[in-house]
Length: 413
Ligand SMILES: *[C@@H]1O[C@H](CO)[C@@H](O)[C@H](O)[C@H]1NC(C)=O
Ligand SMILES: *[C@@H]1O[C@H](CO)[C@@H](O)[C@H](O)[C@H]1NC(C)=O
Ligand SMILES: *[C@@H]1O[C@H](CO)[C@@H](O)[C@H](O)[C@H]1NC(C)=O
Image (cartoon, rainbow, N blue to C red; front, side):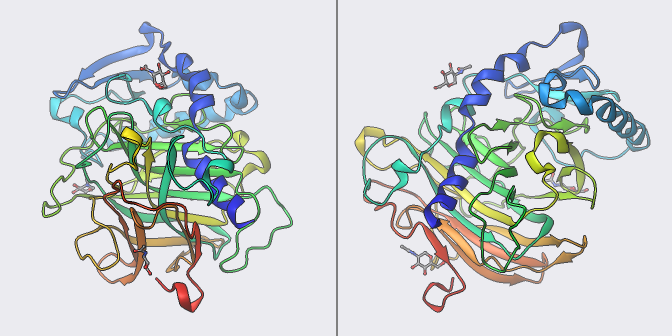
């Protein structure tokens, strides 16, 4: 049970390959006449501002039955944008430096530049077999996690401030990420009990910063899985996420990700939340980015049972040794006061209220390389802080103690 939760989580975050591969081309097949303007940033990213009703992801067959409703929601969002015109952009991204904005009635879609952003190659699915404690070294590639999990729900969402670090060391074929995930179960008989997870966490939505070996830039990304990780979709690649915001481009880099541990690190507030009856929305810096229609999830994902914060690294065993790609800023908790920290984690309970909520579980797949530590309550950014990260390295011993229960005295973190 323990292991299967862990591996579901593992699959969930990184099993994007199949769906992404299948639907990737649909996403790039943009009809040129649906592009209102094109914006190029100095770092070479190209953003197409695409007619909000013609974006390719609306072709996802799962959305067929809810398309009329989605069109109405988009129209409402466009109407809202009209009042917003004078507002500053909620998160500074490289392409904003160009001085142009996407016009009202369009959404920014980044052209995937194969040399800098190819999550499909970066996050292969992991199976239960290759994370078992007997497979302690060597290929195949696997994803190392250091995440804290709160399971005191039911929840209607979570907030957290994610630090934006530019990875100091990242192998070409690898990836490193910092994220928030909310997960739900299709087991309608499951009653949330503090610290307990269901056997399946089938529905999941995540938001965070992903970098791969192209240029190490932290890139804002969303992802979801409707089936416990068997298929999974990042950003707008295969439909599902209905972006309504015209100022934030998924997959595009954030300005000024910090690189040295002594640099000033920017934080971005991310949240995933829903109304009692509505769909799950993703917000960035308190601004609605868009939502995942209920129809893409089995059981419609009415509430979440797990909120997950922390980091992951894809380890491809370069040169036959455990990778030294960094997680966070490369410092490893506990006992190092300069580690990366996700700040002010707050849950939204089933009644829609914000609550302080201490993570009671966690996953550490290679604690000698990458670890997390629940630091406690932060008064400045009300909520719980969690330190995470590490430098990896050839001497890491992986796979011990995969899942940890923080509620028992021996594991108090
Ligand atoms: C978040 O928004 C505030 C103002 O709304 C802005 O000052 C801040 O720079 C934004 N954060 C980022 C990382 O862009
Ligand atoms: C992305 O990576 C996959 C797997 O490594 C590869 O098959 C695919 O061609 C890559 N895509 C691009 C656009 O480079
Ligand atoms: C990982 O962090 C926990 C505290 O969160 C600590 O108890 C444990 O010893 C650490 N593990 C390693 C291998 O450093």
